[in-house]
Each structure stands twice: as structure tokens, then as C-alpha cells.
Image 1 (cartoon, rainbow over the protein chains, first blue to last red):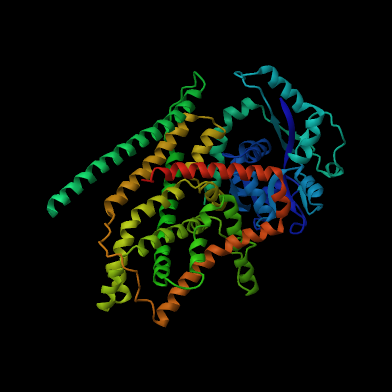
Image 2: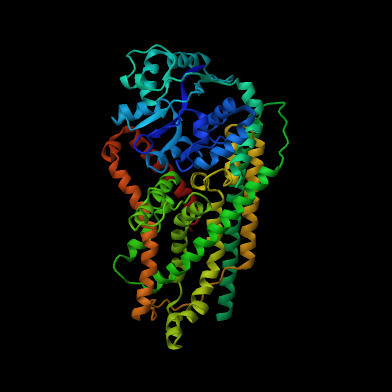
Length: 213
Length: 361
């Protein structure tokens, strides 16, 4: 059962990047001295998200695209926290995150220095889900909790704590900052069967392209 | 009479030793059972019908090679650099702040990998102090640490201080007679190293190197974050990958066994190469060193100590500075942080008691 979602996006520092990439193609073919930090698809969901994003846009050409993008990649971190930490420290002017990340900076830090780049091809989406396991000890209680998760009280808290978009009705309107976020022109999402059966091959393709010298 | 007494002593010693061995074996069996049960739970969790064979493909071969390469280089560098620092610290046994330098050497290991990585980047990174200095001097920059050099830098930052502490403990246990004799023979620095210090350090090396090798071989966050790309992946990454997205416990366990086998093999080899030396008899007189009094020698020692201290201190300082810039007081009052602190302390305390308890005899 989905309880929140977010679109992946390249977040950039407006103080160092005046003309952000306007498409994935722009990102792949842009100036390699402007670096980006990405996450590893073997260990993190944003990393896997970018992998699927590139695959959705480039299809069979994904390997070549990665080989090109590689020169722009400063480093590949195991998870989102490391990547975002490097980005906010100023190590790289771009990072792979979510369209909602600027809302965090606007609401919690009162700055619009960090912005998401809208990509003309569209953005890949991440949907976070909760589920009840078959062997749950107290199924009734679990169901009650699931109902709570999509209830308005829980959903009102999600946007400003997990910094993801809510899926249900809210008790209070979203903070104003959320209205200024990038609205993806198109949303990419592959079926989980597709991902499950191809992930290994695609990660191998990524590894091969990214490990070349 | 004296002889009989001696005989009895050794017999008592024999019984005691056997008891110790038995207790040790019992504990080992307990620990093995504990680990095996946990592993078993993972294996049996696998869905029925998904019989997979664990294949050691080209990928595994590559990550294994890289694990060995980076861990060997990291261990070698940490140990080599630690020797002059430990010697200098042992030689200069009295100077203000010495105890603080030694305490400083205990700090890096206590840092979470991510925090340490950010601290190191604060100094060595593209926007770090080093590149800032180079820019100020008008030199070409940025010097990029991402790659094998970054991994080695981070591992030396973590482990060189550890090696220094372990070696220093050994050097400080050298009986005072040795220094007296050395001074009487007019031994120079090189002879002292060759005949007095090196035998002690060599005896400690297998233990220190094995420990550091294990820490470096299982390194994960540092290797990925500073490695610059997936060409820098350790077996640990493959293990995590097997569990995180693939949920393939047999593969994860097979990889863990591979990791244990490699480390075990190295441990045995190091033992073979350099058996630990026995402590010499001593009258227990106060240890007084007669070397390292000359001005030049003192200056050399303090340069070495100073460089090591700066190398360790700067990234820590960078962490502290960014901590102060963040809302530290607000964080300290946060009930979630307080609860986390209590949990950490409780776990650390219990683990420490279990680990050390066995040695109390």
C-alpha cells in the first residue's frame, strides 16, 4: 500500500550553476567539470531510480549514456545521506535527490539556494509502500496501523518530515514552498516485474560503463 | 628443594593453563553457535523453490581483488607511518601535552564512517582547506581525493593512530635494563631500532596488521564515498547488495565466508612470518631512556609527532566546526537524540563488559 511518493531530480546549487541542465540529455552531455554526486544502484533507492530513469529515456543506449555521464560523476555514494552531505558541503554543485528537496531548504532553512532542475523528458517516480506480512501476529492491529498510515493525521506529517509527497487527504494545506516545486512534465515508472527481471543485467551494464577507465 | 618447588609451580601452571584453555574453548563454541544460528535463520528464510547456486563470477573476482589491494595498501601505509610516530612518542616520554596526543590517537576509530568522511573532505576535499591553500598560493587545483588515494587517506586516518597506540604500549614495556645497556654500549638510533625496538615491534606487527587489515577489508561507506565509482567496491558492498535488493542470503553468506577465509588466511600467514616475541625478564626498574636528548633528535621527533597530530586533528576539527555551525544545543535537547544516546551507551557498555569480562582472571 503506497503511503508517499516523490520524483527523482537533480538538485543544483544556484550559487555555482547559473544554467542548470534542462534535460537528462543535457546532464549527460554537459560540461564534465561541473560535477554531480550520485548514489549506487546496488545499495540505494535513488541510485536504482537514476538507473531506471536513464534506462527509460535511453533504452538500449543506456550504457553509452552512462559512459558519457561518468566523467561528470564526482563519486558514487552508498546512500542518499552521503551524497547529500557532499553536496551541501560544496564538493559538487549537483546531486541526485528528489523534487521535494528544495522544500526542505525553504521550510527548514529559509533559503532557496538549492533548486531542482526540471528535465524535459520527464522524471522517474519513487513510491514508498507499507505492507502487512503474511505471518503477522496481530493482523487486526496491523490493518489498523495501515489505516492510520494513510489517514490525514499521518499524511499531514509526511511532507515536512520525510520530505515526500502525501497520498491522502491532509488536515492542513501543504506549506507554501511545496507550490514552488518542479512539477514533472511526465512521470516514468516501470512495472515491478520488468525491474525484477532486468535489474541484474542493467546493474551489470552500469558497472561495466562506470568502471571503464 | 628449590628444584622441587619449581616443579610444583610449573605443574600448577599447567592445570591453570588447561582450565583457561577449556574455558576459552567453551566460549568459542558458544560464540560460533550464536553466529551459526543467526546465519541459519537467514538461509531458512529463503523462499521455497528459489534454489539458486552461488556462482563466483567475474564480478566477485573483481571486488575480491580490489578488497585485497586496498586493504593491503591501507594496512601497509598505516603500519609503516605508525612506526616513526610510535618511536618518537616512546623516545620523548615526557613533554607537556603528551598524554593528549596519545588520547587524540584514540579518537578516529570512534567516529562513524560518514562523519569521518565528511571531516576528511573538509580538509582534503575539493572545497577543503588544502585546495583553498593551493588556490591562495595560485597553484593548480582542485587536487581530487576521490579514488584509491581517498580510500587510502581515510584508512590511514582511521588506523595509523590505532597502530601508534598499540606499538607505543609495546615499546613502553621494554625493560629499563635494555636502555641502560644500550646507553652503556653507546648505541646509536639505528642500532637501538635494529636491536631493541624492532624485535618488539615485529612481535606486535602480526596482531596490529591483522586487526587493521580486517577493519580495512570490511570498510564500506568510506570505500564507496571516497572511491569515486563502482570500480572501487569491496566484498562488503557485494554482501550488502546481496541482502538489500536481491535478498539472496545464501549468496551473502557465501561472500561472508569468502571474506572470513581471506582474512583468516592472512592472519595465519602473518603469524607464520613473525611469531610474537617473549618479554624478557626485568627487575622492574623504572624505565629511563637515555636517547633522544640531543637537540636535532628532539626536533626530529617533535616534527614527526606534530605532523601525525595535525593529520589526525584537522579532520576532527573540521567535524567539530561543522557541528558548532549546526544547531548543536538544539540537538542536545532533542528527546530523540537523548534516547539514541542512552541506547548507544547501553549497547556499548554491555558489549564492553562481555568482551573484557573474559580476560578478568
